[in-house]
Length: 276
Image 1 (cartoon, rainbow, N blue to C red):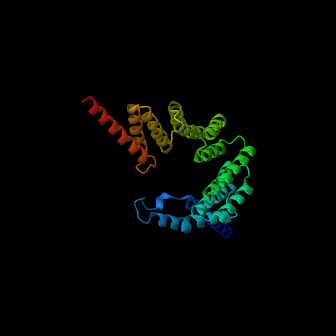
Image 2: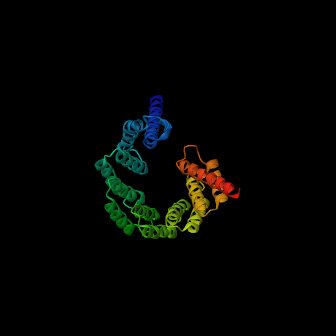
Image 3: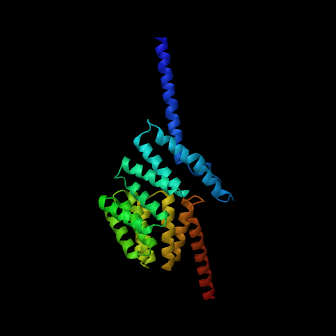
């Protein structure tokens, strides 16, 4: 009886260690900035590349090779590894991972988006567009595919086509985050087309739909820019203040926000000088 109890204890401990290792591998596969240097490090790019090669990719590989890993964890690992490989320019291996993803779940929209993204990174824009169009035909209810194709149209300066795709995404999106993303994307196109009131409306909707500070930071900054073009400097300044309050110092939109703030200050000074 004692031997059986010890065997059961050992088995439980081994399972616990195995589960912990699996969890650690998945965490390392998905890990990013916490173990990386600050952007002002002169060796930042080489360090990131080394981290991807030495930590991220091997960890993803262990999750993929683990027969006990769940299907969802393996999908995450394949997806992450494909992106890492693409960032290193290893597109053949990245495509191989995408092919495996297609076998695991052919109706997963983010896999179709990843496949088009790989083509785009290889400067095969036409192939990426054709791939997305085919995917939209097979998965017509996925707003993410329309958003991605709209962004590709935007890159080609096909603003009418981009606007059409984003508007379709707005109509079919059900999750608040998806709808916010579609409204944000359409707002940018409206702004590029000079439809500033429509842009403000879209950005305002995005702010209400997605309460995550990192996402609201982009929406507030973009709306501030639209307000500035509309010569509504007070509203623009208010949006920039809110943006600075809710975001971290390293938020990507802060550079544009600082430029907009400087423009507002300059215009205010010019207005004062004119009155004198």
